[in-house]
Image 1 (tube, rainbow, N blue to C red):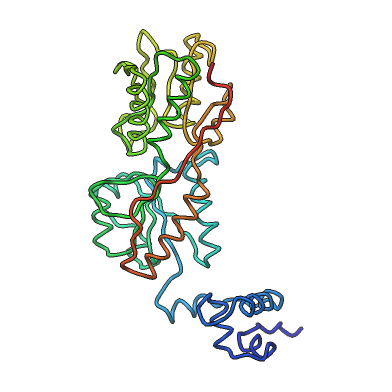
Image 2 (tube, rainbow, N blue to C red):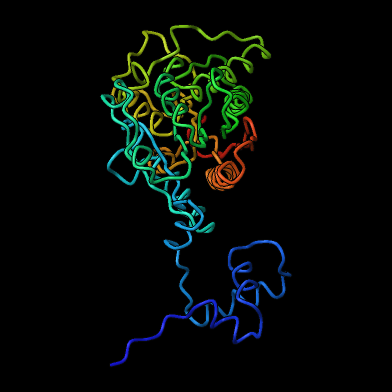
Length: 336
């Protein structure tokens, strides 16, 4: 049986009676070809089963067309209910649309402490890096010294002038607390280690702004930690003797387990204590009751991140600064 011939750009050019250069520009989304002709060329390429030779292209241009995504191990669990797995999946989706591949590398504590660079950087396998979630400052400094385009996603660090894309955590904390107050809650606490990540701290500060505006105080005994530090898994909640009427939890997963902890001591949500959290992730709907939450726009954040890192790769001086993506309140059953 004869092997099927691979379709080349020359074949496409001959069929359309145009130059190979025009076909190359159209398939590479470069200037110099009108939209109508470009679409015609792309449609024919798809119909004829044209396969883009990415290896030859990368060798010629000195690019890998790979983007690295690195995250600390405590942010990436082995189950499908991991928030950052969801973000990584969205990133690969939008990278594929731009003809890039996303490569995930998990950074463990020993690597971070010893400032061991990710293999993808050491082996020149990627053109740029997206750091997903908070990571040690010294480790960030070590990566920066490798002089590779970098983007922070879902966190920021004021000690680095680095492009970052975050959800509007401060305003989210503010509207979550305002909602609790509007429902009659007079005493409100916060669940989360405010020293752990920039996201948790901003959510707490937004909560504080709402309380101050409403001439209410946040009792320090009502700030309940969910972990000891950035590198620790969730810890056992230590509840005070007297509890407030409501809590703002720093994420849906924490709220899910916090509700279970309240149930163990005979308290019901929302009858005894109201709960609002963040992310609008799977835990908010698995919970009984379903949790009122601040939705994080993962789709927009990931699409924005992909477009940004590719522009940084193509233009070394390109910078977009810190970008804040709007969030909104999803009302469910956890507030009385």
